[in-house]
Amino acid sequence: MSTHSSSPVGRQRPRRLRQTAALRDLVAETRLHPSQFVMPHFVLPDDAAEETIASMPGIGRQGVTPLLRTIEGDLKLGIRAVLLFGVPAAGTKDAAGSPAYDAKGTVPRAVSALKRAFGPDLVVITDVCLCAYTNHGHCGVLVDGYVDNDLSLEPLTRMAVAHAAAGADLVGPSDMMDGRIAALRDGLDAAGHVRTGIMSYSVKYASSYYGPFRDAADSSPQHGDRRSYQMDLRNAGEGEREALLDAAEGADILMVKPALAYLDVISRVRAVSTLPLAAYNVSGEYSMVKAAAANGWVDERLVVRENLHAIARAGADILITYHAREALREGWL
Ligand code: PBG
Ligand code: ZN
Image 1: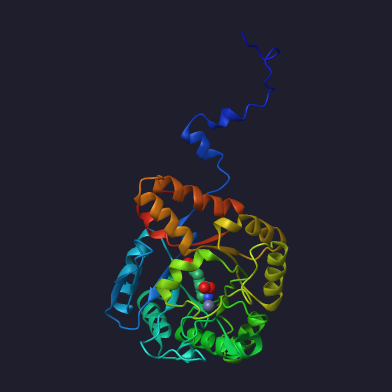
Image 2: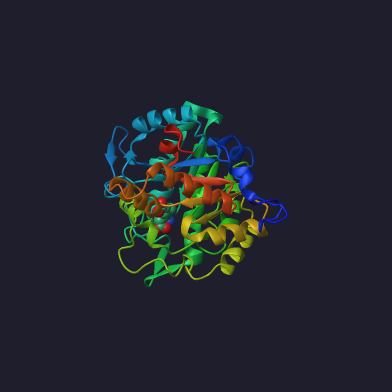
């Protein structure tokens, strides 16, 4: 017989609050809402085009016409923010990445179409980086094979201004050049875009989890890798420094990328800044779940729910994830 006084268990019994779903929901510390999600999109230069991406089941590359339909459907699920990656017209990539700042390029045209169709109901965020637009696939301008920091700031700023002029709500620099937030902020302000915000990829690691994305965006470096500008995966304190620098330079939203392999970094950045914090659940993290689920090795619904809550529990306010549409449509959260 077990009475309170003779039981080895004290008065605190954490299991009391786990007895029913209603009790568990009542005391849940982390809740996900559709308005926290950002759905990424790969935009093709040909308006009518639509392609699949072999390494990212469920995610496609679309021209403006099918893109509008897709986003209209996502809005009905409650997804109110998109992140756009552009694919330039065939044969236009050059050493300077000049199609990146073409005012009539893939992304500016998509942004104007989305703003015309959905106005303030949709938050349009654009990725600002040169790698999909340079013939060498690096995120900045090369001088003797090295990505020159300061020379890269001008084309990146022009790209951000082109996106802002088309109506982007937020620009998202993902290049990892030093001083880029200050350069973009000054450039946007000088062009009259004081109301366009910056969601900075502040803490972006040189990660092997970007593989499927580079197929989708056709943005692989043609030589070398990105370790001279993206962060070393061994460092977390440096992540705090990068985040604080971007905050001081005028970023409106900070980001940690990738998300799942860097939950410690999310929680450290959360602790040192009160700015809104985004986490990017990247392509490789997505594709691994899809592959394991397709093989029947994990239950996709439960694993996606667990991963997305982990990212929020670590401290992210905003979740950029390829799972967004399916998770909301299927009620996985
Ligand atoms: C471009 C960029 C990359 C991603 C977002 N912006 C790739 C890279 O830096 O090589 C990765 C996103 C993903 O893997 O889902 N700089
Ligand atoms: Zn890049």
